[in-house]
Length: 582
Image (cartoon, rainbow, N blue to C red; front, top):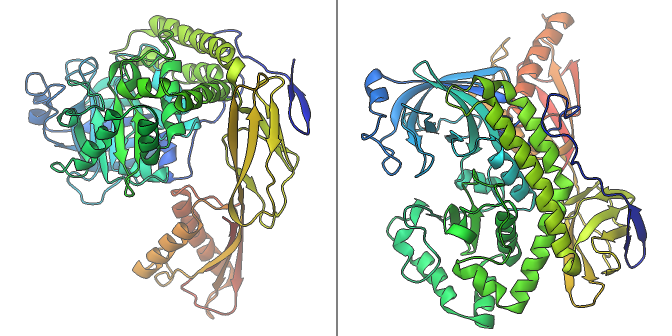
């Protein structure tokens, strides 16, 4: 038992470590849910659900996907393909899409082996998406015999606020050939960044074959994923910052980047053993320039993580070394290490690895190109052990300078540090209590004042027990607002099919209530004079069923729905009143 001290509260709690049995059929009880997001596409990225992608192209196009016609650095043209998909038991398609192979030096395979695939939904049909997604990435995991590394690593990164992909699993076939179990990795593009609230004007990728560092003259080494192909002056101006030293570098780089997020990314890379990332190998990273000129570094290609421990201040890259030799940046990086340690512990990554391993076991066995279940299980067991070992080592490493928070209590409810705290509409006061991560650390809670609707910020200043380290921890508190939206979608006479205007009305309703909570729908429909109440109720029920299905496809699920046939109004419209908090 560890007792944590703070300014106005002493909290005792037990830290529980899940380091028992490794992977077997009874290693876990009821499975957790690892689905993130309320968008319709969230259903694609459930790591406990194996879906199916069936691809079919002409024999001529199929044969063109053999080396040397294509290679890791020559993906070729988008080939017209018919694709059918089964997600959580529901069938979608067939769609006409574009397909080509994907991969890099170590992971690329042609169709003679376990090929990986990219799918472009709108290659031949303008505006076409699958649940709002226009690009699909199906990784072959040939460099990950555990089948788990990317799912585990990306979840850690996302929890720390680093915009990285969600993952799911899928069996993939092409022209009737089973290519086995693949990882469906959310494609890192403008759409994914927008889901994180990040705009993108220019997206660069640092990767093979040039392994570019952010030093003068390296601009040509970067692949341009989106934005101007000819004007890279934004990259040149940013790289020039690394010609500076010390405080001049710190001031300039801090003006362009969220330095806490940047150091969290580096700490996560090293913690997860991502030796093939920016910090250790100048590889597998993106640079995003948003519309205001801010820059963000995003890790990628984490299929070789959790293989071994790395030094936490060991890098040949320019930026980490400039950071570690400048005291304020080094102090921030140390706090980022502490946050990584805390996040990994709170996420129970070992349990997640066990549960995914069990969920995909039969598909690993059936994978015709896989390493075999015995090899996969051995790698999975090693990964589970490695997570626990890394946690123990880092927890001990950060203890002397850890000024992070272990838990937060607001109005009697406990929250994890880093998560936004949502309070009911009308809440104006917050009783804030905290538990520090380091024993004997001193915490001072800054006065919050009266809360307002929307986002509020609170601060807790923590000083380490040796008084050598001070950190200000920000706490985001969001107070919901009660809202009401009304919509009257029009339907064709005596039909469950909405008119064009009616479809637009339903779409606008969905946009208004997207991301809301405590959604309640009150729906009314008028009855025609010559229509029985039974028929009116049946027609209304069918219309409401389709309406709810349309909202559900966007991740919108009301807590209550009331339906009433009334005597006034249009018989060909639903009168919808939506009350919710947002």
